[in-house]
Each structure stands twice: as C-alpha cells, then as structure tokens.
Image (cartoon, rainbow, N blue to C red; front, side, top):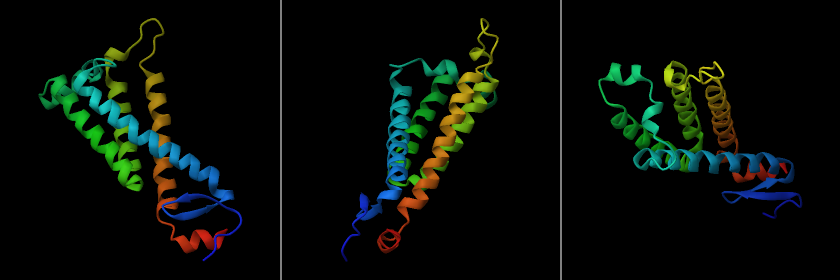
Length: 160
C-alpha cells in the first residue's frame, strides 16, 4: 500500500499524517521526559548527588509507617525507576502510574512542615503547583499514548 503524499512522521511503522505530526511530537517529548526523569530521580535516591532526598519526606509518613526516611526514600527510588521503565515500554499505563505517584508527592509536600518557607510564608505551594503541572503532563502522555500506540496502520493511513 503506497503512503499518502501527506504522510509525515512514523510511529511504530505507522505513518502519521502531517496534520497529526505536532501531536505526535508532543507525545514523543512527554514519552522521553516521563521515562528519563523518574529513572534519573529514582537513581539519585541512592546517591544524593542532586539533593538529600531524605529531608523531603514528611515526618508523619515515617512515624506512621515506623520506617526511617532513608529506607523509605530508597524504596521510593526503586518505585520511580520502575515507573520510568513502565512509561518507556507501556506509556498508556505508565502515564497514569506517574500521575498517581505525583499526586502522592503533592500530598507529601503539603503535609511536610520542612518545606515551609518562613521568608515567603508559603507551605511549598509552588512545589505542589509545579508537581500538579507535571501530573497533568503525565495524564496527557497516557491519553496521547492511547491514541498513538493503539492505532492500526490502516486506520492512520485511511485518515490521511
């Protein structure tokens, strides 16, 4: 079957019509970003090269679960690496997993008194808002993955 003259980018061997190319490019940006970021941040939970992640855990979490912050954050690192790999290989599911994970991070930030900035009298709302934006991006990734990863080749070609 010959490709339509307006066929643009390719997705898993499927032609994407030029009109869908920007959406597919956005999907690829989100796919790469939500694969790399969780893996990098998850690995850093073991090395603390970027920051001492242990200080970001709300004390109520370690008190409730009876586990120290470092042990908990090590488990967090493992989960983040797995989430990144899930996004890499199954973005339709991984996007939702990362979104839920970010919701947990937002909750932790909002109950953690250490993120209180006395100079600005804010409770880490800027961090929570940033992570909410990331959560929306993860949801967008999952929705775009559903669209681009499940399209049979003939459907994409027929629409062109």
